[in-house]
Length: 531
Image (tube, rainbow, N blue to C red):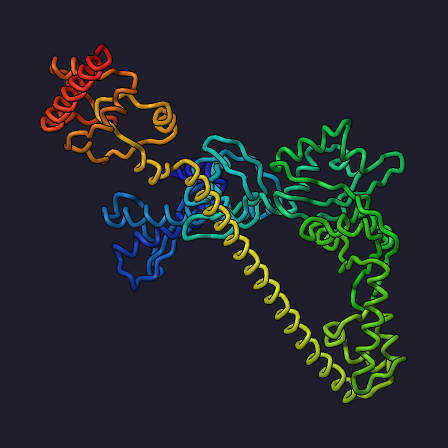
C-alpha cells in the first residue's frame, strides 16, 4: 500500500469514528500479521511496523525481512486482514463511545423518540441510540415517535461490540439540570442547589441558597409570576416542586422543609440522627402530607429521621418509654430517663444502641449491656407481632364490614326491584273474574278494568251453551238492542270476543237462537201490552 494512502485512511477513520490514530495503526499492523501467517504458517513469528510519520511499513518473519505487498497475499489472507481491521475499528469505536458517555453521566441530553418496544422507549442521541426503560420514565407519561424528549444519562455499559446507554427521567439530576438551564443565576453560580429530594411524577423538594445577599434564591427560582418554575413543572409532566431556603442549621432547615406546615419546636436527637418535630393538632396532617409524602421528602432533604407529633403525644410516648425501660433487668429509672432524653423512645431503638454508648450512659459492663439489648430485642419482636396482628384484625374487620355493606346493598336493590315489579304486574285473579260476554259492548265497569289491566292472552272462549232467559234480559239492557244483535247475526257479521279471538260456528248458532228467542219474547210482550 502506498504510504500516503495509508496515512489518509488512518486520518479518515480518526475523524469519522472518533478513534485515536494509534489504535488505527495497531489495528492495521495486527491485520498484516494475521494475513502473513496465512502464507507463512501459524507457527511463524511475524512482526509488522508502520511508521507513524511517513506511513511506510516493514515486516519480518522469523527474523528475516519480508515485503509488504497486497499482491503477495492470497485472497483468504486479504479477507482475514479486512475482518481484523473491521473488528478492531468497531471495538475502538465502542470504547470511544463508552468513554464519551461515561463522562456525560448525570448530564442533560436532548433526543428524539424512535420507537416504543414493550414499554421501553428507544431515543436517538445523534450518532447513537439509547434506551429509556419504563422504570426510568415518569409515572403516567407516554412518548410518541418523533417526539423530542429531555433526559439524563444514567448508565453506560458495553454490550458485545456495541454500547448500551440507559437514560432516565426519574433521577434528581434531571431536576437539577432543568434548574440550571432555566435559571441563569444557578448557571452563573450565584445560587446553589444544596439538596434535592424527589418522588417522580408527584412532588420534589429543592433546597437552594444564595452567595449574594442581594439575590433572593427562592424568588429567583420561581421567577416573575412563576414563569421559570412553570417551564420546569411542564417538562416534568406537572410534578409539584417545593423550593426550600437552605440553612446549615437543622433547627432552621427542618421547619423550612416541612412547609407549608407550621412547626412549633424541633428536638434533635444527635445520637440516633432523629428529629422530633412538634406541631399543633390542626397542623399534624399538613406536616405529614398525603400518605406521608411531605415528611418523607423532608427527611431525605435534611438527612434526618423526622417524626411528627403533638406535645401530648410526645409526653405520652415519653412516659410509656420510661416505664417500659425501667421494667428491663439492669435498667433503673435514672438510666431510663437518660435513654429517653437521647431520643430512645421504643424497644426497637434500644435494641440497636451501641454497647459502648450504653456502657458509658449507665456505667454498665459488657455482659449487662448484652442482657439489656437482648431483652429489648425480644420485646421489640413481641411488639411488632402484636402490631401485625392488630393490622390483620383491622383488615379483616374492614373486609367483613365491606362484605356486610355489599350484602345489604344487594338485598335492598333486590327488594326495590321486587316492589317495582309488583306495582306493574296485573292481578291475575282480577283478570280471571272479569266477565267476558259475546257480541256485547263492555259495561262501564268492564271498560275501567280493561284500561288498567291486560287480559291474559290464553283466556278461554265464551261458553257455547245457549244463554238463559235472564241472560237475554241482561243483554236487552246494554247499549245494543236485541233487534240490532239479531240483525247483525242475520246478516252474517263476524263478532269479535273481548279477548280478541273469533267466535266458533256453534257459538254463532247459539247466539242466533238466543236472539230469535229474545225477539219473539219482545213481540209477545208488546202484544200483551196492546191487549
